[in-house]
Length: 541
Image (cartoon, rainbow, N blue to C red):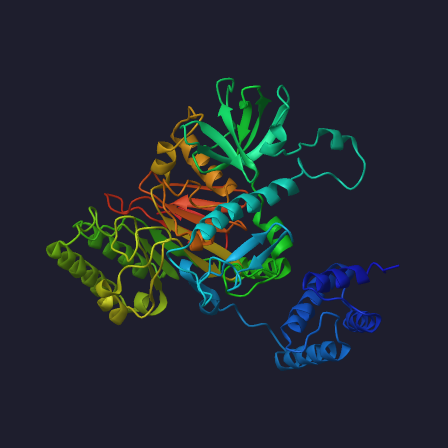
């Protein structure tokens, strides 16, 4: 029988795909006893050893005692050299800007119920193994299938759908998901289905899953659950199946959202961003240190920085002056488009030249503040009207021909994709510039909420996070590069999401994820938002 102290040791190594023999297990117990590690700290301590063992070139599935001893001796040497007070956190070394086209593709394997990293063996890759902007029919199907399966596995793990291992009365009240193929020949019965809302060839609203589709009738639905239901979003639909092969809907709702902590506790070993995976215990430790050591660090986020507007540069100068006067220098300033109020007409050389001059003027303005230039990272995220290589999501950065002066005068400038991500210690911050409120409201299907302005903001945030995707719409409404659909995923849930939109500004936290819209910068107030990583909240400035 496994001793209580051995269970967390076996659990940690099993997470990395390793099994422990009696000798290796005894050696690890001796280490814990030698260093007087308390029972509640066993898992945290063993995590470091298991992670380092996994990095060894000669690591085997059954843990080798010799390799394990070498890992431990390496730790001992590093501890001896670093005696004394721990070093202060270095924000610069833990700040990473991740473009959409650099993120690895993780595909959900329904057979293994796990994420698998894609390689050249999959049919939608080129012979070289690289993803393409053209994509294929297979990749388009796989993108939607990944969306479905990722949400579905979170639904089935929810308490309302997942039975307890112990017998209880609650098992009788569990909800059971059915497939569309199970409807056949069962008219008059009630079903709970999960699938995507879409229109069929006849223009009728349907629910489609991996097995087929069924037409929906919303005439008997009094009030849907909260959220915005659009064509392309995934929904839980309960209704009665009729002899006319129609599902009369009595309830519809978004799938339940899974918190970042829950997802990370299961898939903490998966490196979704390509910057190295960390464990939930490491994340907790880093979060505590960030709160303690970096309470005043801020990220400024501005949207609709119209450089063709005469007041914009004056507003930016006012913001920079305020920072200098109060000795409050932000670590990051994110400038989201559109950088022109009207965009640049195709082939209009005069407007192209004017836009070039405006970016050059911005470069000179930033360079006029040496302290900000040396210490602050300036990030440019293109908007829907900006000039990029492609107009399909995810969008490429601003064209390099326009930004040569910015590159030469501002050393810490970053020209990011839309969307892009910032990894800061244990936090993941998603930056997305798109007018999502208007797009979602234009494409509502089935039921339309009778909601006020504040409710709409909450509905938008809830819908996007419940869908685990920045654009829960069909590709006919919002084209997406199918090979890069994963870069729009919001799973695991990020720490914060910036939904930069021309709609009214807002800020709210949903399931532990802080979402905010900084609003348009141009105007009498020069509005923007400041995100505080220590508190995981934003402030309206």
